[in-house]
Image (cartoon, rainbow, N blue to C red; front, side):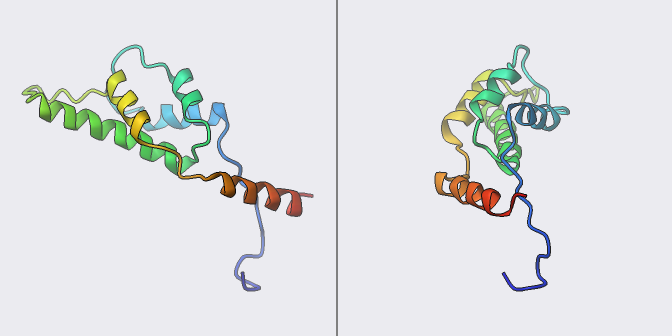
Length: 114
C-alpha cells in the first residue's frame, strides 16, 4: 500500500451468529417465504460467511425458487422460497473466505489492534 492511499486500517471481522441472522432477516424481508424457515439454524449453517456471501446466498435462494417454479410450470407465479430451495443453495454455495484469509485477518488484527 502506498502512503496516503489508506490512512486508517481497520479490522472488520466476519459477521457473528447474530449478525448473520440479521443479514438473513434483512435480505429476506420482502421475499415470500415458506412457513417454518428456521433463521436460527440458517445463521448457524452460514458460519464463516462474510456479508457479501450472505447477500449472495439469499439471492441464490430466490433464484432457485424461481427456477423451480419455472420447471414445475407454475402458472401462479408461485416462486416462494421453500426449505428445499434453501437446502439446495446450502449444498452448492460456500463461503468465499478461505482459511488463509482468516489467518491474515487475525495477523492484521494482532499487529494493528491497540
